[in-house]
Length: 172
Image 1 (cartoon, rainbow, N blue to C red):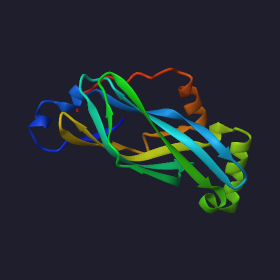
Image 2 (cartoon, rainbow, N blue to C red):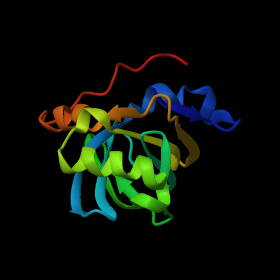
Image 3 (tube, helix red, strand yellow):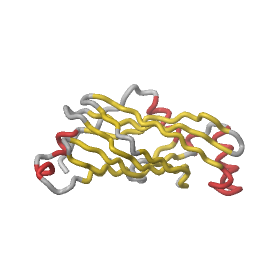
Image 4 (cartoon, rainbow, N blue to C red):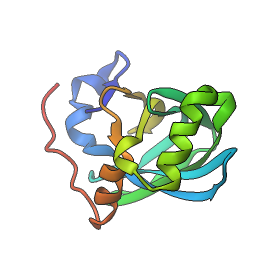
């Protein structure tokens, strides 16, 4: 579930949430480099615009966590338009210095889990905000860490599916 904050005004009165039919999904991950000291991983988030309206992602500020420990922050303020009935993928690279991030004992465990690909023992969480514009109205979309947490094994399974449909639009 994603929280959408609509500012006061006439746009809120026409049911912008129902018109938009936009959802945010975990798109996957790819380990680009890994050794006993560091991990570099690309993380993809899909923005699915199922509506008949153009959506502009004005900015985002996202935090990434591995096993509950904040490992990276990604910010972007370059606007990106997503046309109606289209999907756009946001990919960001996180870098993790194991020992500095997890300490000596936990870093050894994390390194072992990555080295042996025990992805069921590694969770990835995301929280933060997207600032978007729809019908000229600014919206803030909040991702909550409690709702955006998966094991890397679960994400690998999701990646095998070509696309996951947006959940049905519900009235707020």
